[in-house]
Image 1: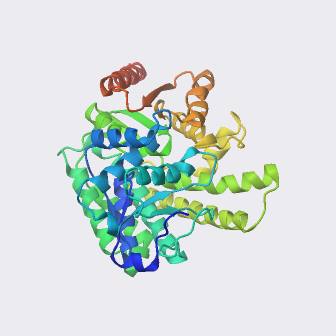
Image 2 (image 1 turned 90 degrees about the vertical axis):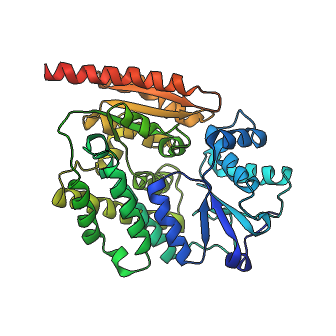
Image 3 (image 1 turned 180 degrees about the vertical axis):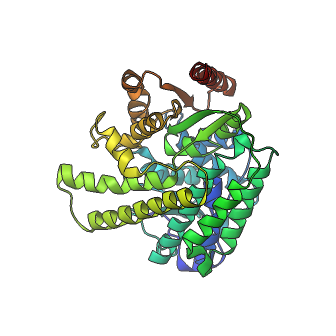
Length: 413
């Protein structure tokens, strides 16, 4: 029987969770603090985390499992935390992806390392596990969704500023200011004023002095962890900016809408019903409403490009594959590649973690078909695993960037 996280533990336990989205998670940490949870993200040496992961997870499992479990185990062994007053937190999707089973691998690692007393909290909306000391109340979920919305907005517009800033570091300073401010006001009514807050955020990013220069736009797609986590993709975004490219990447809300859509797909294809279907439809409509609000705010209050409505993203993929393909990132990964190319971002990096079979099928496996329909698309799959040499990854990306730069020169000739 797994050790439960109890109400009593909530008072004085530190909860450690894996890092993934620095902008989003900074706000979510503050939201959880309002509900009495002391959440921390352990920032250590990546090599140390990978080594720790390989000690506890078989190397034929997916790379995200190795690095996430390695990060949590490294945190416990760092001496920074009292194992008798520490809990770990990990998400479970409840789908066919092996990510739903990371929690069992983590518990095995804890047992083998002598940390049986450390409870592992499952964050899921599928009823897989429940802990009396951690409850996803409507208020907590609502504020986390709002933090996600602000995180997506800041990520989207900052990616359109960073490669063009005249003074290096200006964009990061604005990001830091707004993440800190939003975290500070997350317990006040100001946090709920999305339109007013978005207007101020957009105007401040718009005011950053920028160079007028054309950059190679590079879209990033892939398995959710290596797509977003700097630790999981060798700081891919920083490398692309250093090489003079502009990063284009869909927000976390697209992944959430994908997950909610799959409940409806299960109903249509397999006759699944129940409260889960109703809840997912409500969730989808709400997050889609928020995405449309973001698009409207960006159009009305700034000069930035807007993200694509998820309904269009979902429609694009149906000419290429059935939406019943939904293990891991499933049809969403192919849909994101199509949306990028359709919107003029022809250079795409598909981040492929070792051991993620669904990701290879809907990512690398669809590249040829996409290129047949869109001959100008410049898509490259980059593999991430403990043994991958960073220099090899970067050389492949540089070749893709060179092709992208040549396309710009040919268009402008």
